[in-house]
Image 1 (cartoon, rainbow, N blue to C red):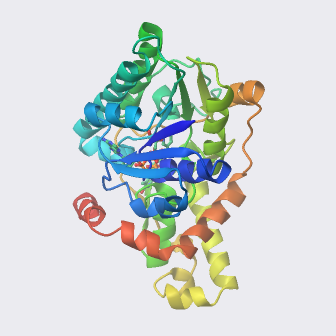
Image 2 (cartoon, rainbow, N blue to C red):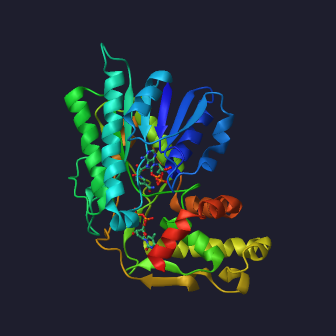
Length: 363
Ligand code: NAD
Ligand code: TYD
C-alpha cells in the first residue's frame, strides 16, 4: 500500500502515522498537512527515520497538488483526518470549518476520483475520519449512537463534518469511489493540542491556572484512547465493507466533572511520588501542599452545548474483531505521564497563535 495521510501533523493523524509505520516500517507514507495552528511537524519527528516516509506541507483544497501527489507517489489509499476540529473555534469562526471540512473534502474526493477512476480504474480506498458529534445529543437514558442513528449535528463543527460524511457517501454511490467512513467518540492521548479538555486541564494544573468547567459539568463524553482509534481505523482499512461506516468508541462515558476530578487526582498522586515535579512546576497546587481540584471553576456554558455523546461500537467488534485495549482510568494515567514527560512539546505548541487566541477568548 502507498498511503496519503491528510492532517498528519495533528493529534490523531500523527498518532496514526506512528501506528502505521510501527507495523509497516518499509511502507510508503506521504504525510500531508497545511500546518495550521493545530499542526506541528514535531509530532512527526520520529517518522522521518522511516525510509518510505515523506512530509508535504499543503492544503487539501489544492486539487492540483493532491492529484500530483496521488500520481507521483502511486498512492492507492487516502486516510483523511485533515479538518478544523475544535467546537469552540467553530462557534467564533464557522467559515474556516466550511472551507476545510466541506470544500476541502470535496476537492480531495474529486482529485481521488479523477486519478483513481480514470480509464479502467485501479484498486484504491478513501477512508474518511468523522465524529460521533454528527448524531447530535443524547438524553441520559437513550441508547448509544449506532451507524443507523439519524444525523442531527448541532454545532458549526459537527454540521461541517456531517456535510463531509454525506459527500463521501455520495462519491461512492454516484461515482463508485471505494470509500469507508469511521465515526469515533472523543479521543485523548499523546500530542493532543492543549485547547481540548484533557490536555488543557493537565497543563493548567501544572501552571496553577483555573480549570474552566462549562455549565454544571454534567455533560457526558465517551472517551477513546487514540491508540485504540488507530487500531480501529486499521481494521476498517483491512477488512471494512466498501461504502460502509463504522462507529469506534471506547466504552468510556464520563461526565466532565468526573473526568476533571480524575485528572486532578492523578496529577496529585504523581506529585506525591515524584519530588522533582514540585521543583519543575512550582505553581501547581500540589507543590504548595494543596489539591489540584481547588482550581476547578464553573464558567458560562458553551452555546448549544451537547449534553451527551456515547458510541455503540458493536458493528466493528462483531464484523472486524476490533476491541478497545485501554480502560479510561489507565488511559488517563498514561496521558498525564506523557504530558509530564513531554513538557518541551506542549510549551512549544502553546506559543504564538494559540496564545493570541486564548487572549481573545478569555481576556
Ligand atoms: P487536529 O486539529 O489536532 O488536527 C487537524 C490537522 O489538520 C492539523 O494538523 C491541521 O494543520 C490540519 N489541517 C487543517 N486544515 C487543513 C487543510 N486545509 N489542509 C491540510 N491540512 C489541514 O484534529 P484531530 O483531533 O487530530 O482530528 C483529526 C480528525 O478526527 C478530524 O477530522 C476530526 O474531525 C476527527 N475527530 C476528532 C476527534 C477528537 O476527539 N479529537 C473525535 C472524532 C473525530
Ligand atoms: P472538547 O475537548 O472541546 O471536545 P468536544 O467539544 O468536541 O466534545 O470538550 C470536551 C467537553 O469538555 C465538552 O463537553 C466541553 C467541555 N469543556 C469544558 O468544560 N471546559 C473547557 O475548557 C473545554 C475546552 C471543554
